[in-house]
Length: 236
Image (cartoon, rainbow, N blue to C red; front, side):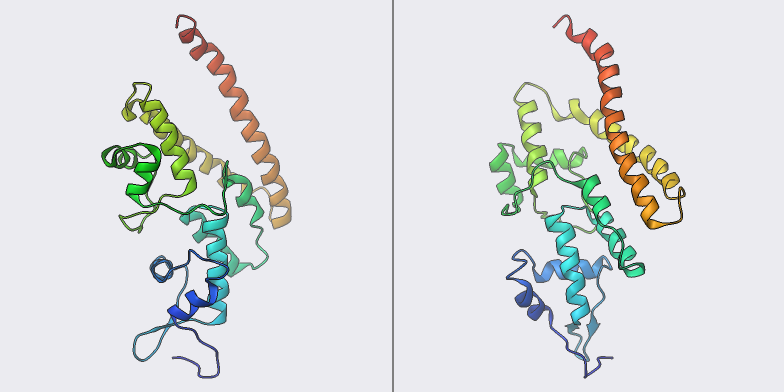
């Protein structure tokens, strides 16, 4: 039931209100967030969506997390739910984990045909990229996905490898390795959550571990790579 004393906005009014600051925000994007239970608008007697100022502020956070910080949808869901429980929740941790290598604030997401043309891949190759898991789909996304800046970086790298005479299946082991690594790392981070009961203390430990584990992965790779890959390349 809508409280007549509270200020409400329709979905069109929300887009209009935020378009100056968030030009990429669309009605379909807001509906998708509703489907993913990131926002819960009230319905008028006629069934139209109505949003409070609190809903609008929540959308600003979602846009910031998705479009400015490039965080994946499952992480955004986690953050939004944690912010509901604790408005002081530290978002900087996620910046350190998921910070993109390159970020152009003016980058415009591309349709499938645009991404193919930009990278020199065929539509069939682009579809295979998704099928093999190089660009995982987020649950609930439209089949006509938009390709973000980091997606294009992946596609360019794959295209360069294909031009050297390889096929996408040759690189599939990277996807499998990463999936296994992430599962193991997730178990490790569950232990991290139990290290201390205070948020501040936990964040200090997390930051130290992020730095240590990144360096550890790099150093161990160099050690094993020097032995295994080096011996293969000696005769090349």
